[in-house]
Length: 356
Ligand code: NI
Image (cartoon, rainbow, N blue to C red; front, side, top):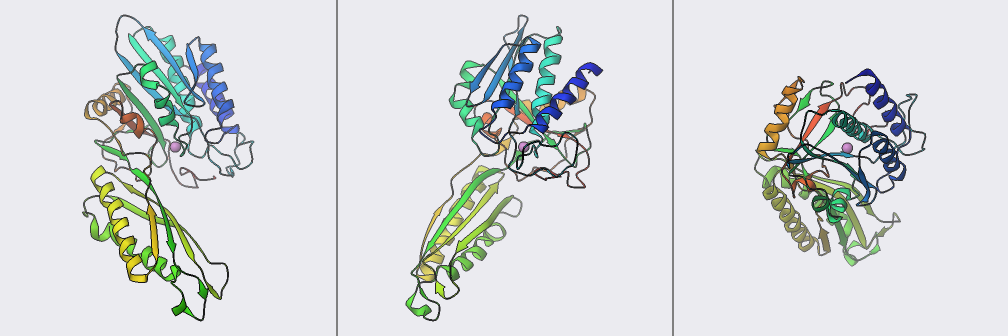
C-alpha cells in the first residue's frame, strides 16, 4: 500500500474513532462511508437493512462474485484511552475496533478500484448494528443476497493478543452461538418470619443458579464447549419480606448446534425440577441469537491461501472464541470464512470492549 493511501486510511480511522455511533444509530458513519465511496468513484446503495451500505465493483468478463463485510457500530462505553483521537461522544466508544473494520474495507475498495488485474464482482458490505442490533439479519431481509449477488462472503475481526498483521484462520467454528436466558421464578410473598406461609422464590433461585452450573460439567461431553452464565438476579425490596418473584438473566454459548440444543433442554429440565422441589413456578425462555460462526472448508482454504499470497504470517492453531458474531447469519446463506487479524498485545486494557 502506498503511503498516501495509508495516511488517508489512518486519518479516516481516527475520524471514525472520534465519532462513534451506537448500534442502530450509525447515520454519520454511513454518510462518511458513502462520501468516501463517492470520492473513489465506486457505485453504492445505501439504507440497506437500516444504515447499511453496499458498494459494488465489477470488472472484466468473469461472472464470479464475492462479498467482503465490515461492521460499523460502537458500544455504550465511556472511553478512557487518553489518545488524541479518543471518542468525542460521552458514553460511546469504538471499543470493538469496528472503526478499523470499516476503514479497512474502504481501503480494500480503494485498492480494488485502482487495480486492473482482476475480473469479476466484489460486493463491499458495510453492516450496521452488529452489537446485538440484528444488522446482518436486517440486511438479509432487505434483499442483500438477491440485490447484490455474491457466491461467497468473507469478513474479519481484529484480534488483540495476536501479533499485529498475523492472520488466524480456523478449520471450523470460529465463534460461538448465543442464546439469552430469561428466567422468572414466581412464588408467594409474605413475612420474613413466617416462611411456611410463603413460597420463597429466593431460595428456589439460589438452587436454580447453582444447578444450572452443573449443565456444562455434567450434561455436556467434556470434549465439547459450552458456557452457561447467569449475570443478573433481581428480587426483593425489603429485608423483612419474602418477595413474590425473582428474575434471572444470562446467556449461553455453544460451538455446535447439537450442544446448543442439549443446553437449552437442560436449562428447561433443571428449571422444572427446581420448580417442583420448591413449590414455585419457573418460566424459562432461551431465545436464540446468532448461530455458530463456522468457516466452510473451501472458503477457509481460500482465505488461508490469500494470507500466504499476501505474504502475511498465518496461524491455523488458534482455538475458537466463545463470543458471538453477527457474521454467522451471512454464513447461513452463503459459504464463507471469518478470520482474525492480529493487532498486537492485549495488555494495558487493549482487549475488546475495554474502555482503555
Ligand atoms: Ni466486534
